[in-house]
Image (tube, rainbow, N blue to C red; front, side, top):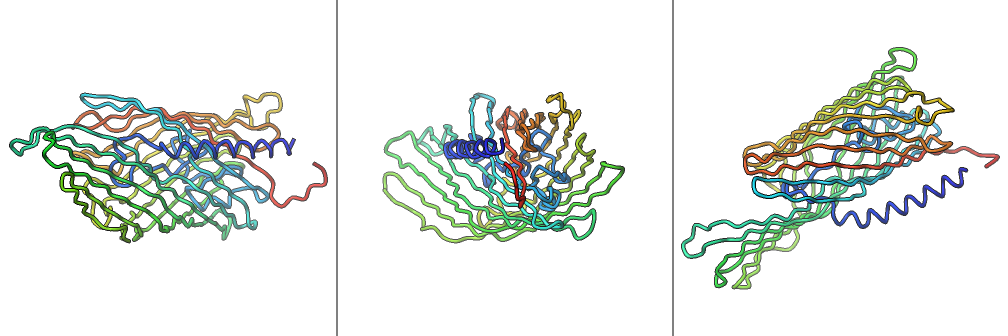
Length: 420
């Protein structure tokens, strides 16, 4: 049976990698991804997707929590855990005078976690950091006499990813501290085209290319207090300091009619990545109930894109909460009683400030953790529905539904088997 499970895991990895190779071409269709670094991805994956994304205080023996590196010491001392997944987002964008529907299917992440000693754990993985994919066009009346209508077209694409390696230690009972070394990389392209109705007039197009490639550090802490037998209350904290981040920037402009190209070759510049902090609280009744609540803040208002403060970017705040309930984790007769039932909600003030309005998002989620036969592995399924933005103030409202599937494979580490 173990050989069958391992073979199935390999097949599923190959399938997911094939899907991800296709999916990375269409990560988002949001018009809001035009600004800053695009649409930022949340810090929580796996089981937390069905729990509103709340995970900073969570410590789990057989699930990975890469959002707080202090959690690696919580994994079983003989465990090897591999986690990966995809999601599909179905969106309806609506403004005062138009609407459209889009579908995006994406590889989300993969991560691994394993013990080093009884008091030290480690993990590494790859996950998306931001996505850009917009195509916006409209016409306006130009104020210059004799020119008339001007067509403006804005389109962009690209994605950035975060590879990380982290470790945590438990200096004494109840306290764990850790850090993730993150390498953020990727390419973003922004394009602007102005076309005048009069063919004799010139057109203007501009392309901005940004390549990210630098390191950041995420620090984490968790303090675990035992309330009663198998009942714990855990405080989790994460922090990243503001840092100078290396990018390669290029700007090219083409003036039609004169065939003039303005710009320069790709050059190194420095942008400021924001300081962030998060605080999470988790109540855990082992193999029965877990309740999580998070607050996360990122100081994007002090960042630069590139080299100067972007007036359309402000601080990001996110509130999330969720729970997991297991009727009977040890049930032999009933599979339904071993299923993990999850639900949650989140509210976020995003890092975008457009038309003097901060773009906010609300969502609710629910899902299941389905145990795989004769193992501690789990298929984590989640559905999230929500809305982002508004049709007021000449903005766009996005009603969305997201379906996620994350596979969590558990195996034993450094065990010599006499029989298979």
